[in-house]
Image 1: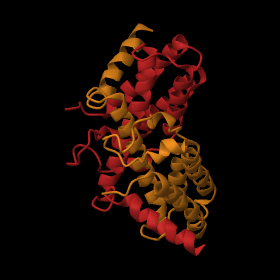
Image 2: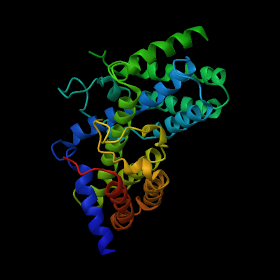
Image 3: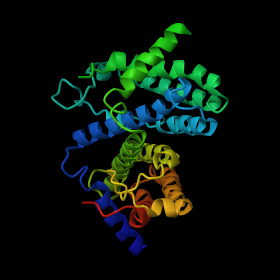
Length: 154
Length: 154
């Protein structure tokens, strides 16, 4: 086990280099949730662009993107939203204090995105129309949560 | 369906605002894979810190972090590594051309991380020692892939 343990330690140093060392735990959590949102936006963007014909529909690519979205939206975001990490705290975030005043609703809205992603993954490979049919619920889940819990982007 | 579709379009605009519009598809893919790596590093960092006693071990938090890591390491990264997105292309990336010369090995090494995360999720809630026992394989999977396929960080 010694070599593995040393490797694990070495990897940890590399892993955290340039990321967490200079940050407070709260800044790191905010950064991590923003990374997750960006990755979700990117992955969802692939689906929207195919649904809207902005890039050619490709059954395999659509299925992969929807599966990927289903995978990452399963992330339990509770630890990424520690109390006090709202935009009224002075932190660099668009997260409204309303999140912590309505945490069950926030988490339910977040879970709606995962459900919509799972539904999209079921049909994304079945043609552009099938994909398009799944995008309403997906886009709606983004919008519902952002409307309630995210400050307008500046 | 009309209102839902409009909502989806509106959400897409918001989703992609400030992210993809100014980027080429290749830059966007590089950004997305870096977001994923950062999120993995953050989530893995939570586990390492608890395993090493740098933050107090908490069974629920450890299990959540390991489950989250298992979820996001299931992402099929093939679309995030389009041909030509290596560090010899002038792109802002540490990804070595060796990735595309050994794609099956790269993907196998990447899959090793998912397997290690699933194994960690099985035991992470069973005490600090159990968690510690799972970290060798996890750290090893990071190191193996980075050593072969990532340029030294600068």
